[in-house]
Length: 180
Image 1 (cartoon, rainbow, N blue to C red):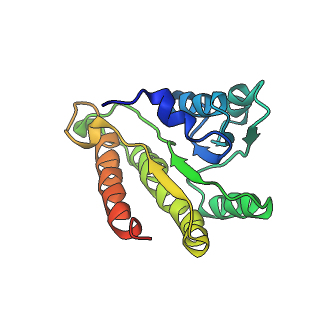
Image 2 (image 1 turned 45 degrees about the vertical axis):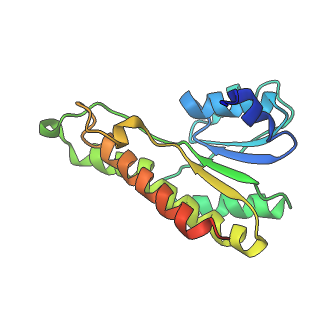
């Protein structure tokens, strides 16, 4: 039988979740639901003001601004959380950009920005968090993709392929990490 989302969210009560891409959209909604369920949530994104809005009124929220396109910033953020003595139980990768583009409208700078944010940012994050999780034998990752990763949608010439890559990556991570 299908369990309501609130039932699954409530399992995170008292646990620490790092939501990356938490300043708007799905990431912000997830972070707010987790906070309402009693999770300790680390909120990350580039927009410090957006993060502050999500965190407002939630004593269990911690704001940790982060540019996911910067591998060094990822390493520093992960180190900061380790130094606090409370590594996250779950890291949720939600950061993404979407700019409608058709295949005949591609612009190199927009393509590079989307690839860096939607795909490379996840790899940088995995590089920063997975070794510690494996060393400690605990923790998990969740990657937010899109239906655009399963089927070529008009106007998603760059966004869709990045989400397809994330779906493939999530499947690979499961096969490699599930036994651990």
